[in-house]
Image 1: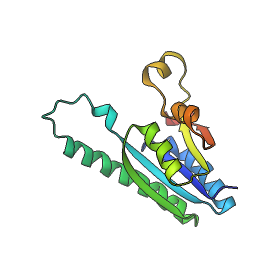
Image 2: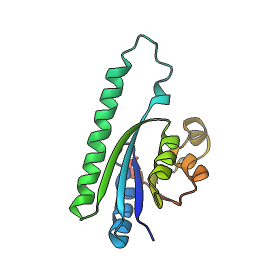
Image 3: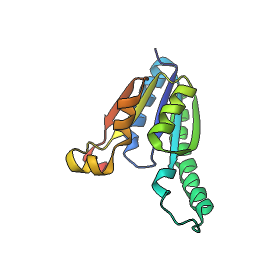
Image 4: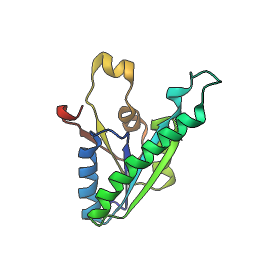
Length: 147
């Protein structure tokens, strides 16, 4: 049923529950798990032109590499074939593009469960992916301790 499962991560502890679900499904179906970290370049679009964008990007990419490597190690310890990627762009667009480009069968994402004004003001990458994806999306609610 699933050959390729995408697990986007933002490096937070809350993604652990989504990883558990992805691991269980990948193990059951013999799927490859794709772990993706997106450096959100839209969040830094208002920086002054003279700011050192390259050093900021390098630091964020290093954080992404560390995050994807930690998750990949967990998956590989359970004998799940794993691929990692760190990309730049608008997170939900990069996630959707990655899913299309890699023929992903399922996207597994954590959600903070924000409602009302919090969600409106902050936006939700998960919500944007759910609303726009042609690929099925499994959302996993983070527990309050992890928020």
